[in-house]
Image (tube, rainbow, N blue to C red; front, side):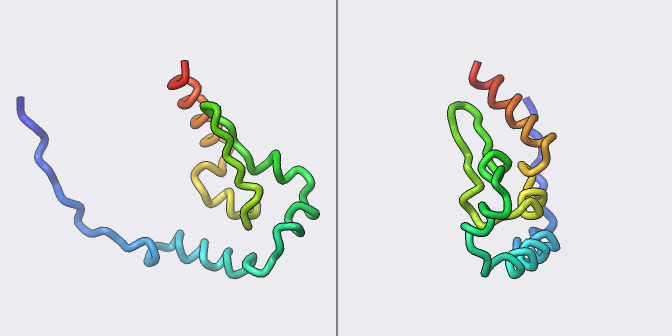
Length: 94
């Protein structure tokens, strides 16, 4: 049996040097002074919109200083990714 040849990564860009990090930092700068109570007051459905349940695990992002924009920037933020995650975890559970 022949193992594939290892090819080292050409270069690893440090996380803080990536455009996505800079965009997230800019977003954080806009929301850093907002209080969590205000997030819930502005969005009564916040708890439902920022939670995910799979494999008897409950992920509650609502109690974090995030907005819909923050959530969209995260891979799990899109409905398609949440559905794929749900299918994958359901399949693993059964």
